[in-house]
Length: 249
Ligand SMILES: [Zn+2]
Image (cartoon, rainbow, N blue to C red; front, side, top):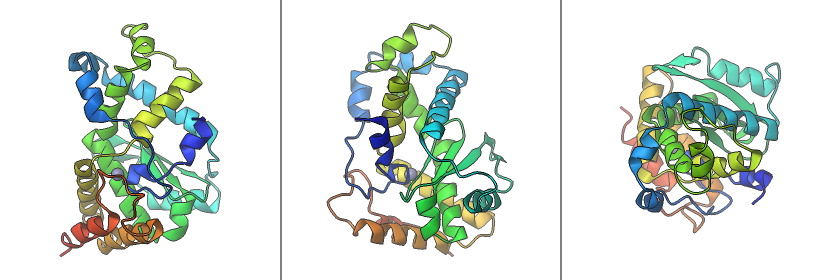
């Protein structure tokens, strides 16, 4: 699959599929097939971040990044004020200008929000999405996938060949990595964990916690509500909205 096509598939980072299912990286199978998990553990945080940075650079080049002075750039800057250093994490935020409704995060603190999502959401709803993405980073969800992706399949040899130093990956290797780490579905428990983090984030910052509910309801409407396009391991946004509703108060 072409890299551009890969990037067109959407919303997996939010646990929501609009375009339909994408063949997902089967983490369970990968875990089973990995020769040894100790291999994954030998990749240092520093090297993992180096791979994330390569991936972020590549996807930033492949997408139209909204300039800081543009209306999208200004809005995201305002919504992420004070978050470049948050909860022990170094974070960086950019808008991808596209009609797609999506957002994703990487283990190195990279957060990307699509303008299509910003268009349909209120400020506090975008904050819910941002909180959700930070939740994935804080919990190390994409780091775990990155470790698996780098120590299984074709990338294993490329990474092993450089020993203790992070390898400079080719465009196609970065494409493979993006698919396995960013476009693959998060598990239901990961999504709930990120949602819980987002709810706590909204409450702590004194934003409207109901925004988590309304954001998920909007996503639900967009997807046709629990249609066959939902990835099997993800709770429908309607259910997640209900879950979030139960945490308000
Ligand atoms: Zn998510």
